[in-house]
Image (cartoon, rainbow, N blue to C red):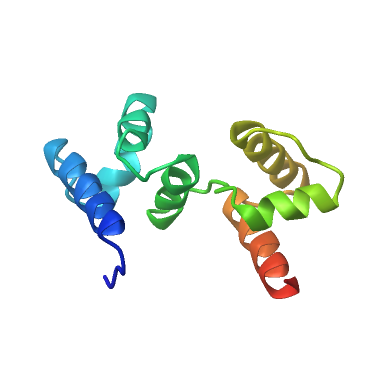
Length: 119
């Protein structure tokens, strides 16, 4: 990885140390480990890790989640949905994906691509 800041390096070390200490060695281990709220909270306790990063990591290991970022917030605001916290807005996207019959990660990706190309 090519990190340009010592803060990012420290965050990567923090994640690595946490996962190693918990016996998380494989993609499948991480997928299962993220099933537990206490583990997600432990990951969030690593300096530099917020809820979006936890959800994004989940997507990288095959979970279908919505990782709310500035593009997804902007899209929601354009649709008249604003002022929601991270968990609430993620819930809106997840419910929308369910109603539309799509996987959460697919809807997230479509919105992200649309907004990133629009700006």
